[in-house]
Length: 442
Image: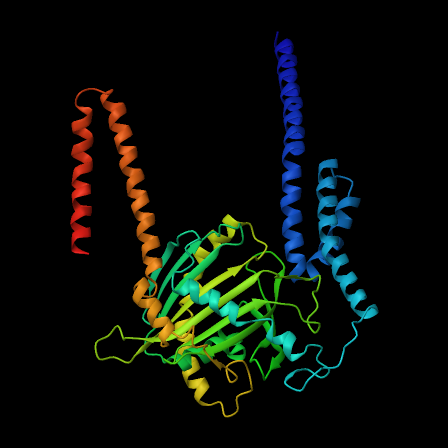
C-alpha cells in the first residue's frame, strides 16, 4: 500500500515537474522577445555614447555561449544582445571610414563681409537668407497674439524661486508640426543687456548647462549680423547626442529691448555624423525687455519671452511629459548661473565679434515704439492679449462642457421627470449670474 502511494506521489511530482517545464518554456517563448527588445534598446542607446559597452558585451557573451549549461532561450537572448551591440559599432566605423575617404572639398569665400574659418563656403547673401526680417515678423505676430489661425495656448507650469519666476504654455500646431512652447521668465534685479549676454554666451553656458557637450562658431556676417554655430547636446538617459547647426540674428528696438530668431540650417563645416542625431526642424525666438520690479523700490527686472519649436526625434507625448517634468529643473538653475555670470562678465576684457555686437535696429514697421505698432496696439488692445484670451476661452469651453455634462447627469438621475428643469436651472443659473457680473465689471 505504501509502495503504491509512493509511486502515485512520484507520478504527481513528475507531472508537476513536466507542467513546470512546459510553463517555463511558454514563459521564455513569450517574455524573451520582449526582454530581448528591451536589452537591445538599452545597449543601442548606450552604444551611441559609450563605445566600450558594446565591446564589453561582445567579449562577455562568448564564454556564456560556449558554456555547456546554456539553454536555447539564453542563446537567443545573447544573440539579440550581440546584434544590438554591433549596430552602433558598425555605424561608428562606417562614419569614420567615410570621413577619411570622401572628404568634402572646401570652396573659397565670395565677398569680404562674411567670415568663419578660412575658405568659408557661404556668401553674404546666402548667410543673410538664413534668418530674415520675415522670420522676425512671424515671431512678432506670435508675441502680439495675431496668429489667430493657430490653437490657443495651454498653460503647463507656473513656478517661482528666489531668483526668477517662470510661466510656460504649449500648443500643437494645426499643420501637424512639432509642439510649440511659449514661456515667460522674469529674472529679478537684472538688466536686459546683461540677460542678453548671458543667453548668448556659449562659453559660459558650458559651465552651468550640463547638457551642452560643445559649441563653436562656424560663420559670421558683418553685413547682416547673421551668425552660424554648431551645438552638440546630450540627451538624458539613453539615446544619441543631439546635433544642431543653427543660424541666429539679433535686433534691438527703440525701447532697449532685444529680439533673437534662431533657425536650423546646414553648413559644410559641420557635416552630420552617424554617432549623433542631426536636428533638422528647429525654430527658437526670444524677446528680452525690462519690466517693473516685483519688490517696491527694488532694482528693475528683465523678462525673456521664448517661443520654441523643435523635432527632437522623440514621440510627441513622451516629449511633452519630459518637458513638463524637466523644464523647471533646468530653468531654476539659470538664476544662480546668472548671478555667477554677473561677476564673470565683469572680468572679461576682450569680447569676440558675434551676432550680439552686430545687432541691427528693429525695422520701423515692427518696432513697438514706432507709429505703426502704436496704431496696432490701439486697435487690438494690450500686447499679449490673445494669450490671455486663449486661456480664458479654453477655460470657458471647459466650464461649458462641465455644465452640459452635469445637465446630462441630472437628466439621467431624474429620468426626465417634471423636476428636471428645476434641477438644471438651480445648477446653471448661479454660474451664469456670476459670469454676467464679471462681464459687467469688465
